[in-house]
Image (tube, rainbow, N blue to C red; front, side, top):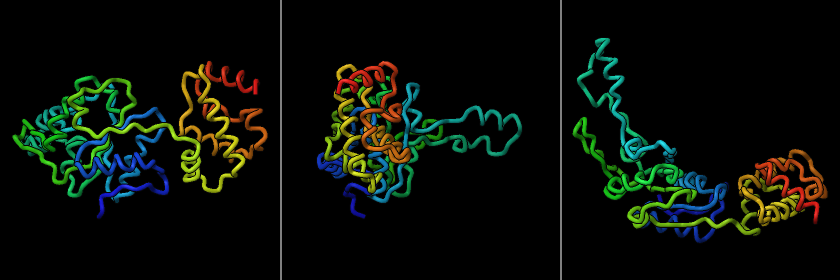
Length: 272
């Protein structure tokens, strides 16, 4: 199958993003995606998997996640428990080794898409701790003295919300792309992939209010693409007349999520 990514029926990518994905695939390097929340960074991995017809493996990163978690876990507690109750095969340590998400991707019989989601949530050493594994596509299990090598090099997509700076050594190994916030033309295309029959005047008025809110200087949390999509769906389901969208801001809680932002939005909108 051709490993060339193209937009799908559920995901519209800019030409620049398409190029970045396909360069990363061709060069066999991880693709590091940054952008503000709600711009489709995580959805990109699913879109690449759908476009290429490959399985998606997701490694969700938390503040407590260690690089080792993605490789394998040795379940000493279960082995001790089995030993106490006389279970057979306790001496076989391999029974108690469970592969993490990176290990699963390496062991897969077919090439997969591996998403390392929100890498900047982990501590500063986390990216550096993965350098060898992502470079050499292998790791060593000390307990069983076995080296796990990737049967097929996975296509690695890494997302970051830029909460922390990533180490230079890690950045050097990645293809980088920043997802710019969509302009109005691209946004309309994105919305119509989800709701192709949305009424044009409703879409135009909702987008006008949406971009006006994003432009307000005092807004702490700007509404995202995904929140606009949800808001348009709410407006459609509620049967809201177009002329009421700006005047009454129906279902405004779908796109404005902070009390202080809501106060600013209502004040500013009354001035129009």
